[in-house]
Image 1 (cartoon, rainbow over the protein chains, first blue to last red):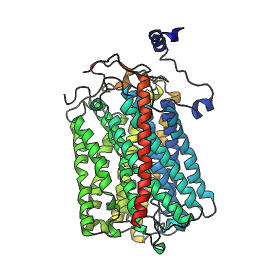
Image 2 (tube, one colour):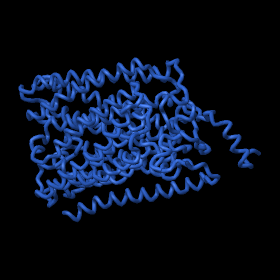
Image 3 (cartoon, rainbow over the protein chains, first blue to last red):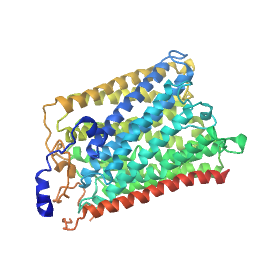
Image 4 (cartoon, rainbow over the protein chains, first blue to last red):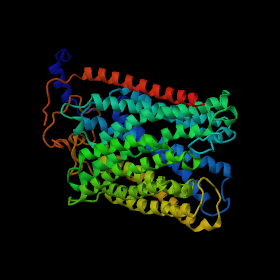
Length: 545
Length: 43
């Protein structure tokens, strides 16, 4: 009757902490799991799968653009590819990857036994494969998939057939999944922290996710509202966005971008958190300006809600509106600059080593800053009239999203993979993956700046011969970058199944935080009783006091 | 640095987490409704 006595029960339980208690059977374990580590793994595998599906669509786009003239695909299919590539990469690859990392790491970093709402967590994940099945299946339907771009602007998008309904239902499902995930993350961070893990002692990754989750709850329902109105306009005779019925198509753009701009930050704030974990570890120094980093993330999140119309300068708006959105957008450079300076200051006079996570993080700081600079260029209203809808914008957001968000996800995967799998990855092949990726991604996207400045429009399958050379270079970079990611998969499979190099609990010499106090691989259940904090256990236990 | 106190009621925290989730869910539904109401009013 050990369970009758709580003290004996706890002692009994502690003794079994390292046993895994995994459910038996493949389906039982993965379909019905409520374990945050299992759900994190599911999210990460799903994200990697979507990364390759969306990536193969990018390969089709770059193959078609290899030479001027129509080469391989029909223009309608090309438009399907640009639309689906964006939807899959944003909602299927980048966002689920960050949610997967949050699931794996947040409970361990705050000393909680699991997410606050484990069954909802299961539901958040398992909605996603169905949403993407609906979305991708449209390609094989009569009339094909959506061709109006991921921004779904009416009236163009409403020209589609049944695919409109499928796309909108898929977007609704993704939104529900994201909102439930965000609610779970906030509930976990606010209520499940171990005693002593105060808010201003939490790791930056946890902080950045807390703020991102609030962005998700404020932004995703707005997208859901916008696409619901698209649905009723298309199928139920309303005219929210139809000028013929007294509606306003520009209103859709305002509502969409009120979601769309915070969405951009939803995809980059967790990246800031990851880089803020990795750079101190490999600099063997505490993060420079911890509190400033927290406030900078919060400032960026606030500003993200008052800059939406910078996506629509050329649509037309009063001069006062143009000036407001221009200046508000430029303000974002200030907290972002604080972050970049703090990352550099963390490295300054540190004992740096350049393992793969650190290499990806340094590349992130440099290349994300290039994407940030081209963002400030786009914020300038008169200049933006030239850049609007050109490849300059494509270059800008790919620097932010690929060398920003995706590089941070890869950095995180290398950083925490030994904790997840219990094995070290091959540092040699990790570095080959890094250098191959970082060179090819610049061959891929840097020439697109020049193409945009020269006036090449985005979302077209054919172009003027004047743009031929840079497009060929960009496509070669694209195939090279795509192929480089196969190395990533190889490194992961090797580390998980074949590596003989066992990882210790504290995988990296300079790493601090609760996740490094549990064995590698992390046991199936961790912190079933709250950890007792010892000096030096947390990375930020003496900041600002 | 704070040391661990004896008071850590995991069940109470889970109950509080459920309340937090309900409030946040209500906020999400309200934002969804506001987006549509705003569009109706702007017509």
